[in-house]
Image 1 (cartoon, rainbow, N blue to C red):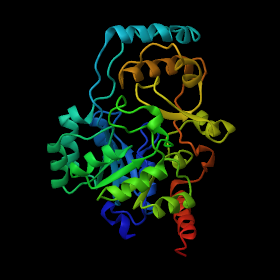
Image 2: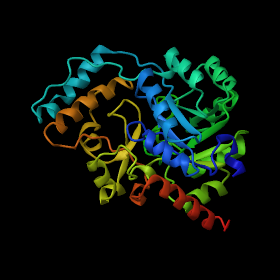
Image 3: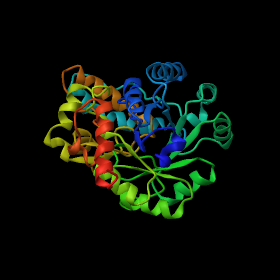
Image 4: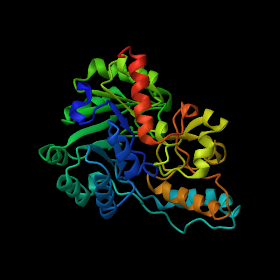
Length: 356
């Protein structure tokens, strides 16, 4: 497809770079079938990033996307963090555990990680995508000089305009329906009620922005792809649609939830990580993030507490505090190998768009 030629893929379908779920095996299978597979580096260090890139390249000679987190560095607030841990203490006690004595910033922002930037310039993956914001102009320029195609997530027109002005090649229009972390630059800038849906955002950006638009959020099948393309998208990004593939890292509990009626109910929650993220409704939404809860620590400091609580629960065989990220159309998820999924999506899209 000419619309996705600058991405290097035959078809305009990107497998979302879901940290903790995507794998080199998943990315390679999607790329080998003609889509653009993705791996997520935001939750790892430089050595882990290099290993993931090398593993993916060993499995495919096709282009793939490497995703990094460009969030503002967390501001440590020991008082707030202590209050949050005290608030979580009863949940830990349910499993005979104690909260950590203190919390740390478990993920380093790409914006502050010179070694990670140097790695990406050195290895020059075909595509690099930015989430939660943009890196410094010098890094954008270095990646472009290395021949890397750049994508960045926008959740409104203001963010998309900044992305275009920065010289990024494609903008990912992420609607509020999307599963996982909402990619807004500054979570405090806009009220939750002002969030924009995928179709509205895709159409708006296609009319106001001069770079190609990738529609992301709630797209699960070929008809969804056709709808997004009809509204001006040049490609789509799909995450939840690939969670049930055998190549993903989703565990058995996550897969079971996604194939149950629980998948009909998703909600954005901030208490898990410190940033809004959409997942299947569980105790984080119904018990932890409630009226009267104390202020949540910054991302990703809050995530340190969430991971500790999940580990305490899991040690007792309880999955209540797992984070099962999923988009609003999660109930449409299908279980099949990633390559078969990509080919099925292409066939459905072509039929829906009248291309065959």
